[in-house]
Length: 245
Image 1 (spheres, one colour):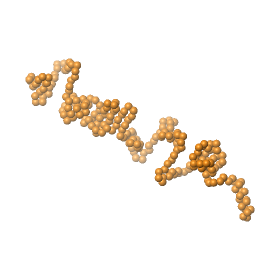
Image 2: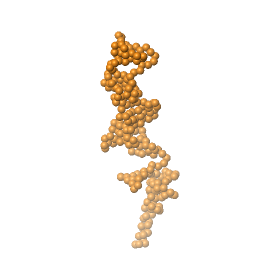
Image 3: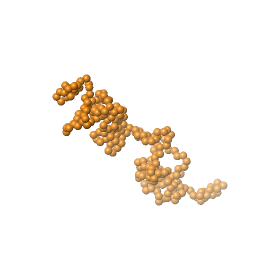
Image 4: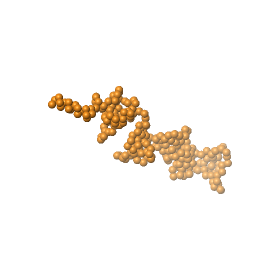
């Protein structure tokens, strides 16, 4: 025993929980070894929270120090360690809030429970605006086109980038309603599709009537029979006048 120090084998301790103070003339402590220095270890509950404390936290397996609060020497941690940014063994960055993982960055993706950017909120498969009744604008850069799968939208034009048709489908007893006017496709006989579908309708500029494909041939959309010209109609009127008086 030397003063308040007890030395036995490779242990040095004090009595009555006194601190061991190492004081040097040059204010430098030189530990000449190629091994390591083992610092105090313990759980969160065993912290002393004394200024300049350095210890190893056995709950989270990290080195930490204390100034005005506990500071982790690796990763980003809150004082109680429940909110943190850490990495795992797969090179992923993990975001945890109140001990719940809310996001992850991998080598090829960002995964979050919910994303809020300015006035836009992305939650699951729903994209919405934060403010009620606000517009959600999807605007391409320059002359680009907004593409949704096989559809492209540019100004007031909807493009079909697939070889098939655009299908407007209704559920149960729903229906499609157009307010105002609808302009149907136009073209001559030479513009007819090679493989039209039943019900395909267009305005024939050569024949000057609306026609529909019935599965076998093109016919007048107004019903059976051919269209009657003005001259033929006048002949019928003259004939009925002579017969009926």
